[in-house]
Length: 172
Image (tube, rainbow, N blue to C red):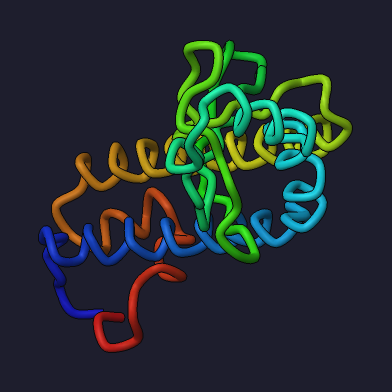
């Protein structure tokens, strides 16, 4: 192997490959969230037919009800290192009536409450995703530390032989 300096381009390449691996694991979790079930449980919780009829009667005009094609959801969840939250967008099948405010709360950001039956499943997936993100950051920090101690690719491989797996064939 020729003397290859461990320049910034090579460092970025190694970190990018590590990001790809962890992001692939993380993204596979997204498919586990049952969005149809979430829509069916969350939307009626927000606006039941009784609530909708009452809102129409109390307000006297229907412009107060906004048709929305999506809901912005945030989900609080606990891990070993404390309380966290995840945010995502839930696309509705068609525009649905959503009151912009009710009891002082904005329906732009809806909180998935713990009492809904789907909460434990979604919180479990989010805890797993959080764990993957933590592991990714820990790995990136460790690898960056190793790379900072080396000036050449040969020195990095002596410290961390698996580094070869993250380097393209042309550089090897």
